[in-house]
Image (cartoon, rainbow, N blue to C red; front, top):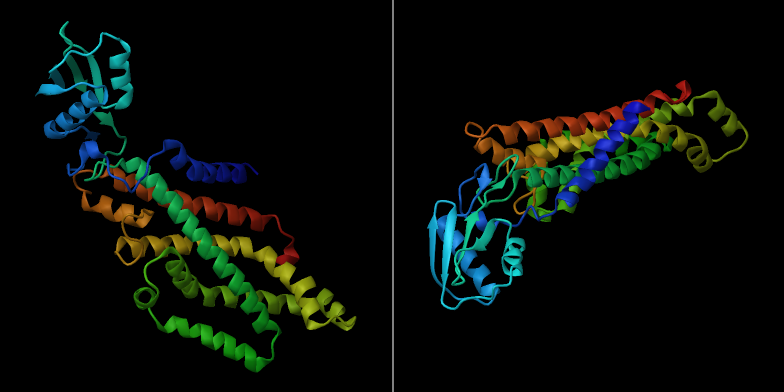
Length: 338
């Protein structure tokens, strides 16, 4: 029970933390636009001058000269502004990267350029790496959950159909699905995206197609085992039709086995999506997933290994949590269902 609560809590944090941090992982930070990836997002002198001029104009002033010395700056105005102390407070709230104070009695302004700390640094467009990583983690988890739902649903339907159908129809269904094994995963994705395009729905359908034969084989085998149980034979002897047997006995038995198998499908979907995105065959910018983040972080692995290590740890943690949930659910089932 403790493992379930802990795993669910971590999944909830994964879901809501990006929203709590705020920000759009696809939008660039203008204070670091076209700047190299760094531990701090500090505007260049030219960018800072633009920010300072915009701030002064926003309060009704006209800058005559702006001087920047390191992180300190001073502004000479054409006309003095009011002596209202709320003026600098407004400027401070307008942009956290700039701290303002009065320079002299003539109404000049001065301040300091404040670097903004980022735990994992920023990328080449000034976007916070931790925020992008959390958004990518949520995107990957949502996508893998979508694929798992598709695979489990289609696999359960086709597995029951194959188990309860005449032998010739069983052979047609299973041999048709096994034809997918003849094609490499990457070839299926490349050919599929050529016709369907690169989208969330298209990639989900293609990865679900890759996983569908195994899911169908699994549910078919489970249905065949349950079909020979004594209570199923007794129900058939009482006159239940094939549809009634499937709905009342076979489907509940298979349903009890799907969560642990679904955890395996989820883990495989995460691995396939991450590999495809890492190789630029899956999601593309401006979307962000764990695979895309790993690809970007690996390009700077020697200089900045921390983002790559943290992203890898998040990937492993996500898979382990789902597998723990699936295994915990399996342990609580009656032996007959296993």
